[in-house]
Length: 311
Ligand code: UT7
Figure 1 (cartoon, rainbow, N blue to C red):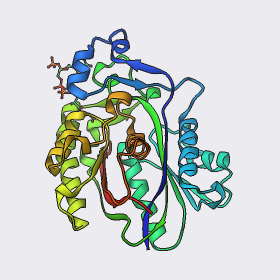
Figure 2: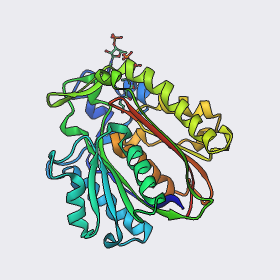
Figure 3: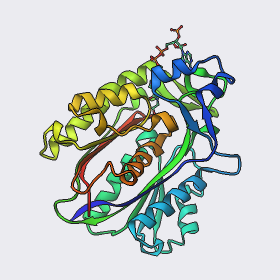
């Protein structure tokens, strides 16, 4: 049995904070942010909207696209580092709000790679036949742990949520290969200390620019394909320069790279599923396409899958 993605969804809060707005908050410029990161604006959730509210909207969207009822879900996983509170988990709140009365629920903490950890965990449950339908949500409200006086970090992040419903698909479709990894020795480079994010940007950059291209190539080769066969690459949206490094290493055309970092900034666990959902909705991802999802994040953590799109 193969596990694949049956439907996707996403949600981004309404409020837009542009680079020009950031110029009024810290000593920065639109020019610096755009050229160093590719970010032009980001979305910020309101005080009334917490992570579970973002996650819920993305989940509804994914269930509709998948044509799966909440009652048919066996497991709900929410990847987040900004849960509403440490417990009850965001996943339990979603289980209740959806009325997913037979689903188990747990949160996953792997920072920006959290959605990848969720997808790969779901694959195991589905392929063993233990569970049929699994909902994975990547949701973060980083704005609540952002230090709005630190220009090194506050210009980079945004809020949002993305989701995927996974289930069994035909033998030639679905997830073909995966890779997961961690390196706790680099944890100090990207961390929450007290109530705020602290980051050594240069060190994270060096790690990411090595790891994302390498993991992308690894999963494609494990799947038995050549690098150039990739139809669509969805990397974690942190910095266009890191994403470009992965694209160039695969040797694929610029239009095959999913880019929305310009609109949303780095939305942590939400970035890959938002880009995935947008790719499906705008027709960039088509049946039978070879799609690579690849992420990295605090921990340090990373994860990638190669999959054949379709049911
Ligand atoms: O989900 C994972 C999250 N994190 C990441 O992916 C971060 C990975 N790292 C990066 O994306 C890049 O390292 C950054 C975008 C954070 C920084 O870009 P960089 O090209 O590595 O710049 P830098 O750290 O070498 O800093 C260059 C200069 C510094 O000034 P000095 O020391 O050379 O005088 C910074 O103080 O840019 C300065 N700077 C800024 N200037 C204007 C740092 N932030 C800003 C800012 N506006 N917002």
